Image (cartoon, rainbow, N blue to C red; front, side):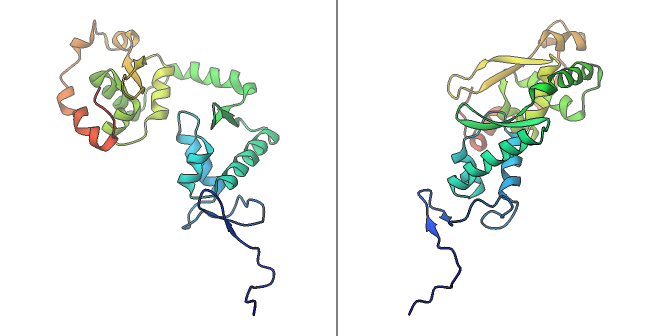
Length: 217
């Protein structure tokens, strides 16, 4: 005798190992194990990344089928475009990332320009100190020393001309950063050798290699 419950949609297991139903993706349905909605999870991840993230990676961290994540990304991108928000969700170089809308460029540029006169936050000062005493250093190592994500702070320091890119690590390809001449000018220094003895108080980068799983520079 068939014990199937009438009206229940059959479920199948996709190639990515997650169960899928016949219904369309529900953006307000919570991910496996409870927690944020798929929409919220994707938005949260994309807000903290510095480079585009592919749908497969998002599916893994959200613990959802790839097809659902791809559908959610397409829907979110369309919603942002239709609602005329200040940010746009775009697929670039095989991955997804948030970008400011082109028509908002003037406002953003004005904010960045006027922000040059504002004082740096404590977080920015601490991040700048790590770069100054550990340069050239990549962003992941700066984050490890500070114990927090520094992507936003690094963008601020870059926009203010206090730090700049200094090539890439040979082994990992990660972008390296260093302080600029403007940094020296603001501090009234001729060169980095005149920096006060603060470096010994910072953790050695070599002690972070195990946690970061990165080769030594």
